[in-house]
Length: 219
Image 1: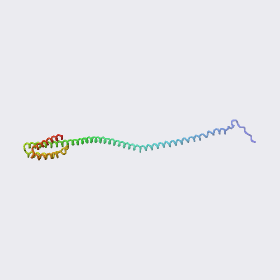
Image 2: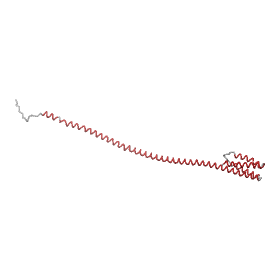
Image 3: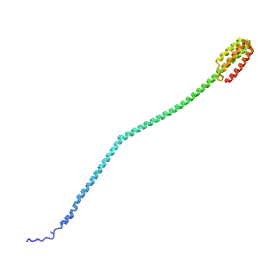
Image 4: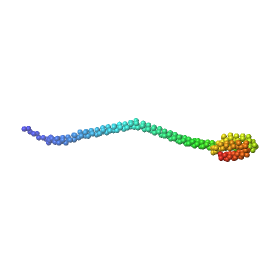
C-alpha cells in the first residue's frame, strides 16, 4: 500500500477552478466590445453614403440651376426687357397718334370753318352779283326814262334791250320768279313806248322803284 506523502503547507493547491471561472467571464468582454464596435462602423458608412447622396443631389440641383434655370431666367429677363421696350414704343406711338389726331381735328375744324367761310363768301358774292345786275337794270331804266322825256323812242327802246340782257344775269335766290316778272313788265313797256309815252314813263318809274326795293332786300 503506497504511502501518502504529506503535502506541504505552501503546496496546498489553490482553488483554481473558482479562480479560473471568475477570470473566464471577463475574457468574453473583448468579443462583446468588438461586436459593439462593428455597429458604429455600419452607421458611419450609412452616414457617409447619405452625405455623398446629398452632395450628389446638391450638385445635380446646382447643375440643373446653372444649365436650365439661369438661361431661362436670362431669356425671360430679355423678353421682359423687349416687351417693356415695345410698350414704351407703343406709348410713344400712341402719344404721337393722339397728337396727330388732335392736329387732324384742328385741321378738320379749320376745313369746316373754311367751307363755312366759302359758303358765306359765295352767298355774299351772289348778293353782290345780284345787286350789280339790279343796279345796271336801274341805270338802264333811268336811261330809258330820260330818252322818253327827250322823245327819243329809239334810245328808250335800246335801253330796254340792255335791261333784257341784264335780266339774263340776274339771279336772286330769295325771289326765284323775279326775272320772269320783270321780263313780263318790260314786254308791256316796250309796246307802250311807241303808243303811250305817259304810261311808259309811269311803268318805268314803278319798275325803278321796285328795283330799289329789290336791291334793299338783297342786302
